[in-house]
Image (cartoon, rainbow over all chains, first blue to last red; front, side, top):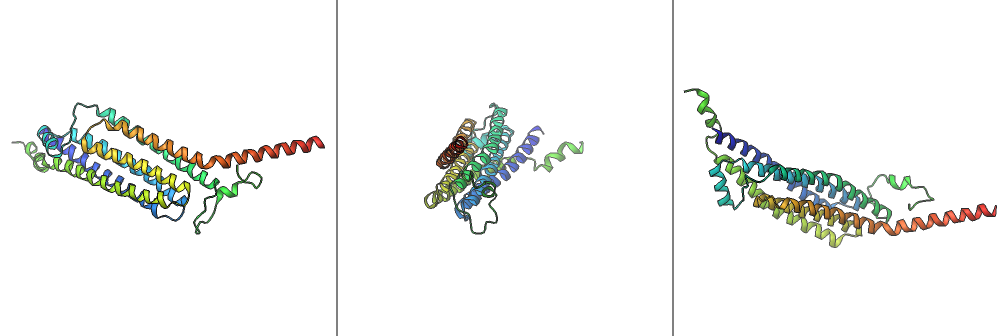
Length: 151
Length: 132
């Protein structure tokens, strides 16, 4: 009975992990495609920062859910997983420590990726990197007065 | 026999093979995800080669750093070892520091020129007020 319940919880955790994994890989690939294909630097930078935040958070969520799920597997199934897939299932390891570090990485990436891409875009605007011909407005250039145009 | 004693296992397909199969699916997805992310790194490398400006190359390098983090996460799923989690933190920190360095490298000449122009304008206005 307990084994069946554990197997159910483990299977459900792995299903959610598979969904998060697929979405993370999708965002990683679409971000790289946008970096290659979009028309000017600012749109490419936009694609890059989406790829960074969503891709890494999806993959880390998949990691945490899969580690928790395979630690909940009943004993014989764990041994089969270790033998057939060459995976190390660590029941004794502190899952809370891994979860804390993973959440720390997610928070750090959510803070640092917008800061980094904003700094890069502002430096490019300062250096006069051109816009796509369909760009409608350039509010940063409008905000600069003629006196301190390069501040 | 109480009906709920063996109804639940029947509903849950009664064995642990289902949960094991989902774990296999996640493992297979992680392996194929490594291949997909290697392909996206190749796309970013093309952008680094053809990128018309330095800022384009900086953004593509930032994406490559984050995709290395993604590969480490997928390797952690594949091997099941917690030891890689520290590596994830360090590589993402280094990617952020690299982006900041590239942005500063692009912006610094313009910042210096703006400071010189401001200083020149201030000294000119001082000379004007002394003359008046």
